[in-house]
Amino acid sequence: MTVIYQSGGAQKAFNTSTAVAVPAGVTAGDVVLIAVSGTVAGQTFTWPSGFVQKAVSTQGAVTVAVAWKRATGADSGNYTVTPSSGQFSAQAHRVSGCITTGDPFRQTPDCEGGQPSEPNTSLTGVPAGDLLVHLVGTNNTTKPIVIPAGYTDRTAGGGFNTSTKAQTVTGDTGTVNGGTTTAFNPFAAMLFSLMPAPPPTRFVNVGGVAVAATRKVNVGGVTTSVTRKIKSG
Image (tube, rainbow, N blue to C red):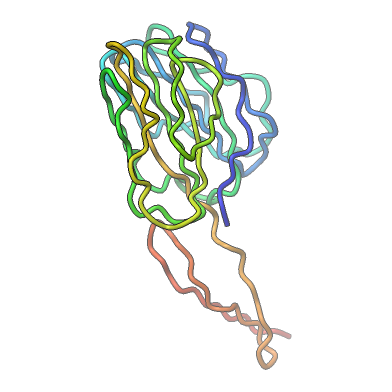
């Protein structure tokens, strides 16, 4: 199975508003991400009920963070994200096909900072079927962000970007960097991948016994053979 990017809410511009638009079509089992980029050193965020902060990347006056939840039903309107101070930009994203229990993040996100150019990020040993997510922000709120090669832009505003890429072959990501450079501004970036749900069990009838065909499943980066028997009749 694979993790699929489904939709993103309207990007919130850099301001003090706490309203972050809910992405379209949120249903039970979806994973919802809220990605934010702030313009104050040491900035922290209070997340909506149900969301758990996963990682923070900082450089100078730039703070990029991500939080997630597994939806239990439909969401609508806005999520409320409250910064400790200052302005921030944000966008919520909906993905489907993730594991249905536990933390969907494959690994601790690679968080890097750089100035005056966007820092390199990378991951190793990412299985096929994962969804790669790249975040990068700067405190030059009008600066267009260059999207890394092979990634799809999920944002529309300057100074902060979310982009995604389907991991089609198991392996390392290599260096992920859009190459954005300013005269002096700092950048904070983050790269992570989300894990897909395992394939459904397939049964065959052998001598009146329903037997699940042996298959390989990836659980937390470990490949395991799974075989189950269920007596029929």
